[in-house]
Amino acid sequence: MNIGIIQGRLTPSDGVIQKFPDGKWLAELFTARRIGFTYIEWLADASFNAENPVWTGEQLEQVREGIKSAGLVSHSLCVDHIMKRPLTIEDASEAEKSYNDLLKIISNGYAFGITHVVLPFLEGASLKDNPKKTNLANEKLKRLLANLKGKNISFCVETDLNTQEHESLLRDLPDSVGICLDTGNRTSFGFDPSEEILYWDKRLLHVHIKDKDQAGKNVLLGTGLVDFDHVFESFRQIGYSNAFTLETNRGENEEESAIRHIAFLKNLITKYELSKY
Image (cartoon, rainbow, N blue to C red; front, side):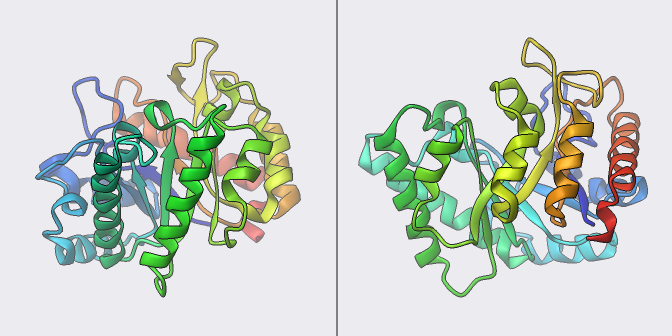
């Protein structure tokens, strides 16, 4: 089973929790492997970043070789940019620019082997209680499928929607479009991720492992509100075999926190026998 971590979480960031590691991205790959991860979930920053190959389209072969040299695999890409520049904004010109940037980012990631693209319809891109935006997001997903036809890519939507709203978003879409479930976010939004896992079953394509406290703050695994035993019992029941990405609190020391968190996760994988799937 593949276990990864969001890019930048192994590199000091001056207090910014979600940050591309700029000139340190190559070194971070080797750090990830040393700790025991099998992949880094590449991060497409919220804004254009001249240091990030998925934004510039440069150094893509170096990324591929770096991942290989570090002994990792290419797996997933999280596109934060669509939270700041939503695909569903009313300004058609800006929406088109955002979509074209998204298409470029995904194509660049695919060039070094990315197979799973996480699309966070959250914060400024939330679709909650807005059927019009949900319909538009559905259309954008269909357009992505058409533009990227023939490429082995799964699209994993992460939202703050309830089950019924999710069904509306995913209607008429193939199984290559499914859910990215974030354990901390779903709990913080007031949902029960253990029940949602059973509901989505094979439509659950990707998981972000996170814990949150009552204030909605990302905290160290096992110290917040997430009932990880119930969550992993549900993973066991559906035979979940896709990847887990740690999107966890950095703690006082990034590497020490990552070592603690991967041990926490591996213990759950062993306890609930997920490695057999």
